[in-house]
Image (cartoon, rainbow, N blue to C red; front, top):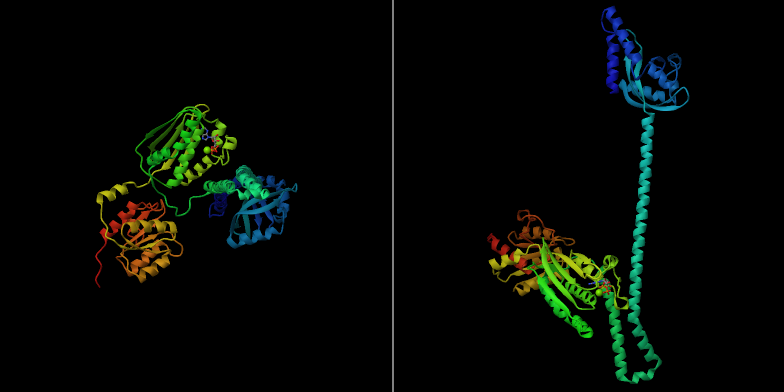
Length: 545
Ligand code: ADP
Ligand code: MG
């Protein structure tokens, strides 16, 4: 904007030098003068040496001098640091013009101001000497605002950093207090377990004659042993709720309905004892829907159900009903365990999943639901609790169903029998390797295993195999690299890749080079059978060289 203004100014100035009649030249001069005098910009004209030729009223007002005072003084003298004038001069001489060049000037009253100078070298008509014409814009306010913005931004950043620090401290304190709760719970349970160990051993040490009573000693030792086992189980239970799902941990299809039936028989002693002891009746009801299998660890899920049943029975000191329901909700299976017991207050409901939180005093460990929560989290599931004092409790557990259950029906339909094959199985996870090898051996195949890609390739070169089944993610040489290496020497050798749950979302056309089929974890037996059958079906005839 400034430069377009300057252009206009110079055009008016230039027009006054044109080859025009004296009359029109005079008219132009007047126009030029009016423009100069009335402009809202601060305009100056100086010689190359810095002597001020003329300034307009805005310029003299800006500096607080009269026009005459300014003309008397040099341009250099209004610089806050006069030596900077030479830099300005060098710049403008180099390019013939400067635009928005920052200069700090000093006003008559001594205050400094930051300005942007836009200027051009100009030659007056009929004269040899050059002069600079230009405008000055005071940006001190803008600069101050920028400075303030910068300052407040850095203050904000500092406050943010302090907030983050405070937040971390709060989290740390929360952790410490949770740790404290846990430690005191562990201490309590351990002391309970240690008491009989100490007491019985002490009695035997103090009264050695007891050792002659074999029956008594046997009883004492049995109690010591039981107490020690209890202590061990505290440790293993602790491990349960902080344990993360291990990489390569295999989940198998679990039928929740079948699990419910199993749990009802397994926990029968618990609710029957209660019935017998208190003369009360606990009804068991089931409402089991048609649900697909979920991928899981059956023993862990059994523990989840056991804990729920125990809590429900303990919450029904009088007659009550325990109901098991299963249903689907989208691609999730829902298992509900519902009792008509004492229920929970809001505070208990919120805290009941915490490790060592119990309202049962010395009868409770407070670990049942914490373990349950850990297990459900490892299964990518969620737990919802609905409860009101006196109105019973419902635990709803949502678990993702197996992604492709159609595989099983497909294999049954196609029923492709696969001839016994020599399989090279490559996987760095011992558990997965064992499980897959087991599947293959039961199906009548011969299996050679390798623990990584490199070993797999060596074994492939050394032996003769119909097919290669390999894990994808492995250190050193990944499954797809192994597949590519195998295809270089044996282009028709089928290679099946096993990959982690959800890793593979692409379509068949996008299979990595050298890979014929992908099987996702958790590996369902039928999916592996189908994969073997399909690659054998598609196998191209061997090229005869
Ligand atoms: P514990 O049973 O050893 O106390 P849990 O972790 O199994 O520990 O349960 C924690 C607490 O949650 C219990 O002490 C109880 O207050 C509450 N709770 C759990 N299940 C129920 C239920 N079905 N009805 C009422 N309260 C329950
Ligand atoms: Mg419990």
